[in-house]
Length: 101
Image (tube, rainbow, N blue to C red; front, side, top):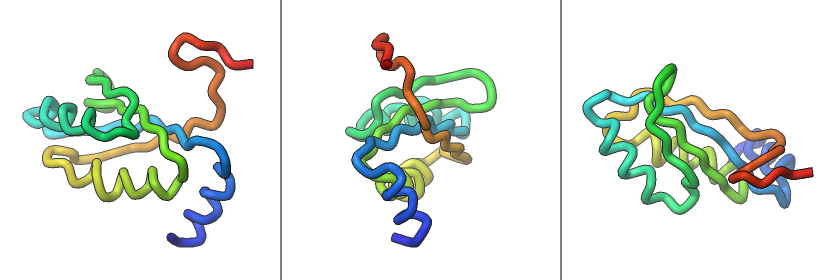
C-alpha cells in the first residue's frame, strides 16, 4: 500500500467506500463481462447502459485500497474490458429508495 492509499483509507476510516465504475467493453464481450461482474460480493449493481459506458457497476468496499485492488486486479483483467472510469461517492442522499437525513 502506498502513501496515497494510506491517505484515502484514513479519509474513509469507518466509512464504506462506495463507487460507480463505468466500463467500456468490446461489444462482443458485454454479456460475458456482465455475468462475471455479478459474481463479486462487493458488486451491488450491474447495469448495461447507453452513452459513454457499456456497463456501470456500483460497488462497496471497507477500504479504498480494496476498491483500487478490485479495479486493477479484477475488472481490468476481465476479457473484453477496454477501459474503466471510477467515480467515488462523496455523500449519499438517497439509496435503494431510502432518503438519508
